[in-house]
Amino acid sequence: MVRGISIIIIVLLVFFSSVFSEEEIPRDGLSPTELEALRQHSKGTESMLADKFKEAIFYFKKAIEFNPGFTEAYYNLGITYEKLGKYKDSIEALERVIQLEPDHANAYYALGYAYYQLKKYNDAVAAFKQSIKIKPDNAFAHSKLGHVYILKGNEEAAREHYEVLKTLNSTMASELYHEIIKGKK
Image 1 (cartoon, helix red, strand yellow):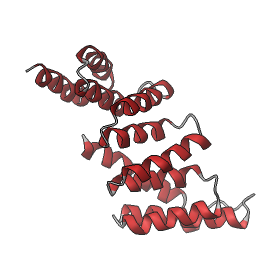
Image 2: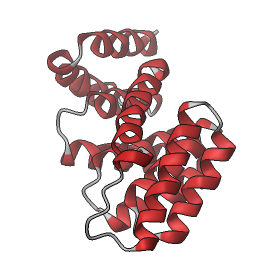
Image 3: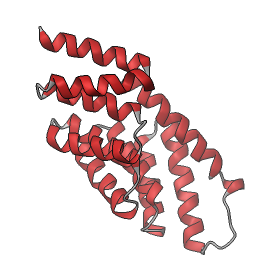
Image 4: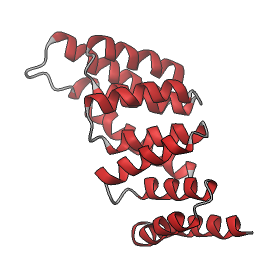
């Protein structure tokens, strides 16, 4: 499951890397500081793709210095912190994303994941629910929320997310189902 999440994150990063590569940075209507923020973000994305997470953090922070309202720089900073297991730092960056863009479903999912890793299950539930509210077909959020409900001993709620997952992602549905069954033993 974590492997699947990592693959999706890498695919998204490759997309954003290609969108913001040096040759392709949109210049029309951007101030010099916004342009520099995009350059720094691009370097951060390249570093992240190369598993140079500390370097990526440096570049994402530089991008934010140049453009404090750069949502995706905060988002990628939060994801990079998660990669390093720095969940409290991740939460801080992801909360900033949500302040800037309250309907950022992926930020809520990542926030829920960070809370999950810190065993703050009530906070994780709230974040996953918000991700699902914004993007009802978010299979990852349904799956992880189902797992949290199992940990909290709420099999009925876990089964509800299993039912939704059956229509979204059969592999994730199967994994959740097996966890529900194990929880009964």
